[in-house]
Amino acid sequence: MKKTLFLLLAAATIFSCSTTKEITEPAAVAHKAPAYGDMFTEKTLRYDFHHAGDNSNEYYYFDRLILEGEWAGSRESLINPFDYGEQHFRIVDAASGKVIYKNNYCTLFNEWQTTPEAAVTQRSFPESVIFPQPKNDFIIEFYARNKKSKEWEKKEEHKVSVNDYNIKPGNCDYEKVDIHIGGDIAHSLDIVLLPDGFATEEKYKFIAACHMWSDALFSYAPFTQNKHRINIRAVWAPSAESGISIPGKGEWKKTLLDCRFFTFGSERYQMTEEFQKVRDVAAAAPYESIFILTNTDKYGGGGIYNFYGLGSAGKTGRTGEVYVHEFGHSLMGLGDEYVEIGNTVSALYPEGVEPWEANLTRFVDFNGKWEKKIAEGTPIPTQVTAESSEKDWKIGAYEGGGYLEKGIYRGWPECMMKALTDFCPVCQEAINRYLDYICK
Ligand SMILES: [Zn+2]
Image (cartoon, rainbow, N blue to C red; front, side):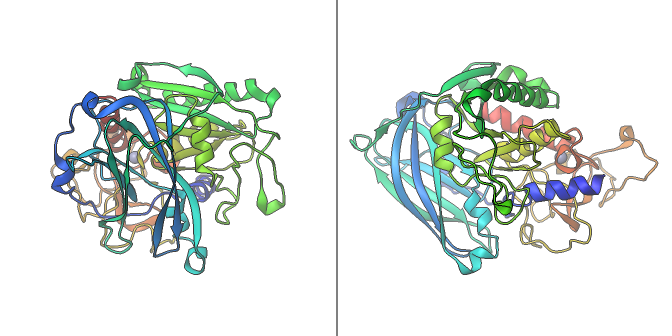
């Protein structure tokens, strides 16, 4: 049963972002962020672009700027201090040269770059980032990890005049439905749930699925304890047809977000490449984190850090647990802690490179992860015997994780990111730290 589950999970999440070594931020972004009101309005600015290239080259092509609704993020936490992800962008004040906003993320393009197709083909994916609207002219800078060294490299910069008449006003009139409101927008994590493949008459089926998603999230620590600072809103946006496309079986549906199975040839990897359409619909609600619920019973989904998470809304098997697992990926890039038996080499977690994920280590740069939580005298690798019960477990370095059997370590025997059980203490602490930043 477990093995089957691992295989299913592997199919859904094997493409979660690849590894890297932790990099110290340059002094330019280490300064304390200026007061929010001096630099930003209360609105959200959206920068759409196309991310193109192949497995070793990437290019950024500007598309458009859109002025959207209320900024849902913190007014204090403006420079993301977590070195997660394969990408980050910075907003630099043009006059002073100071970085006034920074955020990290991963994309579907990053994952496509690891596929065989990327060795022989060039492709372009629509992408988009959001940030609080600057009051003064700014430069947006895009950074990506070097494919070998994993150090950050600046790839593109674009100077923007805030008075540019081409900045288009957002025009989103889809209906917003509150599912759970825990706190005020600035001091909460704002999650938006989006539908795909729900026809006009299926609104209440979607809303019921949103309540199930919310109940699933709040049934797991540490989300249970953080209910007061998490908001969940749904956007009702019907599709022309009911159901989801399954290209590998010749089944195509006209759906609003164009979600489909068989992404990059993996049947259970259900995603959409139309990320700008996703932003168009999400804009009906203030949001920081996107999760898409698709109208299908077929197992599949995925989650990409600060991009979006996706899961099937049909109530089959362990739907709630899978939602929360994928949300672990999309909220803060938690890595998969499970092992694929016999797997000894992975392009995602190369030897000698520290995973950037908070819950995996190769001991290349363990500093700042959970090393201080390991009691003195704990053997490394840490082991549990078949007879030991959970109350005897302690934080350590258990070998296996990130799909590999050897050379990579997790902090606890079991976890939501391993076998859909409760989040382990290492993940719980990392989630709490992340929420403290977002909700400041
Ligand atoms: Zn964990």
